[in-house]
Image (cartoon, rainbow, N blue to C red; front, side):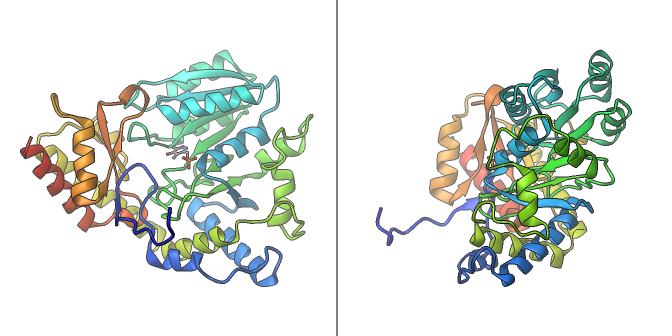
Length: 371
Ligand SMILES: *Cc1c(COP(=O)(O)O)cnc(C)c1O
């Protein structure tokens, strides 16, 4: 491919990546520093402070891992889970399923709590699993299940997990920056995210945070962390004051993350969350006005990702193809159980603006009216 090849302009309204603001793209083009340059070390401290702000935590161990959201998920699992451990994983969509896979690869005995796709996990289900498996080390759950569009309430489940003496692990890949994660307030012991959803940075970093309870589990491991690259006991010595070299930080990505987090701080986290809530509601009302059916019950809908049933007799590929080719809009198709049955429309980070809501609604209306 020639470097002169012109890429079409896309409006990214799928389940991620989301659109990236020019300020963030410019930050990626800044001259490189070394990864141990004092100037870069200051930037790392700024990133850490800003991540603590969006996560809603004072956790000392807060850092962006090199890799996408799945690397964040894997970081939490490989660091906290040892062979023979018992872990409870809540599954109500594709990303819960992915945590089951990771838990098993760590050699854990995985107990699955299953919910229907499109619904939440109910506290009674977690309570029953904990009663049956009081020796469970942790309970993991996805806050914003991007495969189904469900927002999972955490408060009650958090209480149950802690009463049982287990750790609460939360996947906040799609929630961070678009929904309250409130790590400290919600009693989340370990949490991970990704940059390409509501933070609106290209894919490539996975913010992770762990409190002292989780750190203690990490420090008291019997076996070394199975992944050298994702071993937080070493990474924390680079992101902490020691500044020990572990692997070369993806410097330009960290410039980008700092810029995006600074923009979020300028807007105010509360305002950004409100923007997602308000525009998500406008999109959802507009889709229902067109006679389309939303999969998730109103009280459990995510604002930043809306899942809509494909009407009978309408071709998934044809509609998504026309949105992309005629309007430059990318939306997502269904995954797993929902493959071919739903569309997933994202309003994440800088893609979450009224102009995009109006555009996708009218484009969809025009296409559906013409077939
Ligand atoms: C996108 C996503 C992931 C995985 O992130 P990648 O960046 O694709 O590796 C994990 N969990 C949830 C809920 C997601 O939406």
